[in-house]
Length: 379
Ligand SMILES: [Zn+2]
Image 1 (tube, rainbow, N blue to C red):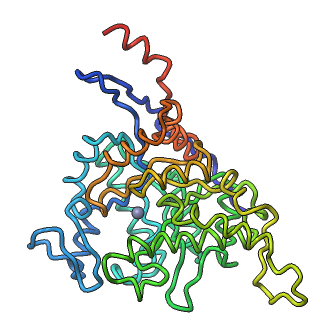
Image 2 (image 1 turned 135 degrees about the vertical axis):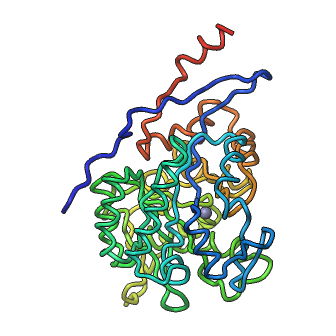
Image 3 (image 1 turned 90 degrees about the vertical axis):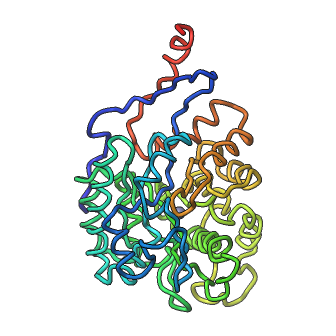
């Protein structure tokens, strides 16, 4: 198979500034791994397709009940706000929405949609030098998008591959334990590239969730949960022991159902004379094990209980900072505060804020911890 060369910071290492302001507050490095920027071209396309009316005030909703804020449609407006709230580098992804972009918004093939998204990303990266690293968006179940993904990794310098946790709808909805996704796991594991997994716009069960914004609050994390359970149970991580995936939104609801997965795996179909084909668990290790070896999560969830559970589930070195800022028009500061409240240790906070991202995405950021004390003494 084609192997992508390891991707390192092409322009050399980027120093991270750790400074102190007049109040003595530490300016820390924060890598936001969960951002969905769109540029002016895609915003115009969304207006053209009637997703929002640029002449009217934002926020707006539409016939699909997609609520759009200025922070999403207007990157020029959102960037200073994200900077002010402390983000020093964002990782751009739209893996959850590739199918929606292709089918509903752009009305083109998956491949063409990916190319349009990639072009927009490269423009965004150039417009905000040093503030964006990119992910290569992909359709996990369409292997024919692989050359576009490879190009985005090799030439575009992408740091991860971004996909949706499910595709399709109703009884045809497929998750990432589908044999069609096997190419992706082989490719990602062989090239040591993290796969970022985000729920789709309309989650599993959305038909009964289109009230009180439950598709967002409950449905999307549920999609991540079903997918995470299926990935583990299918033995995917046993087949690809080196594979690293990042499940957004604190891993959906996986932390709260982990015990249930454990006892179901333990009982499995043992004692059943003729277990139904395809239904028994295939994984070798207890489900909770894979969170320590293959699954990372981000901190997006606005809740210290969730963050504590995520840290306990994965270990503090497998939880990364992610805000979802843009589609969610606020919250970076709150996320930072929750990380600080849950993790009193500065060393552990740094892991979440940037060190783990730096390691797993190979961002090439330089640890300036060693020079910081000297800097402070000189003031
Ligand atoms: Zn998101």
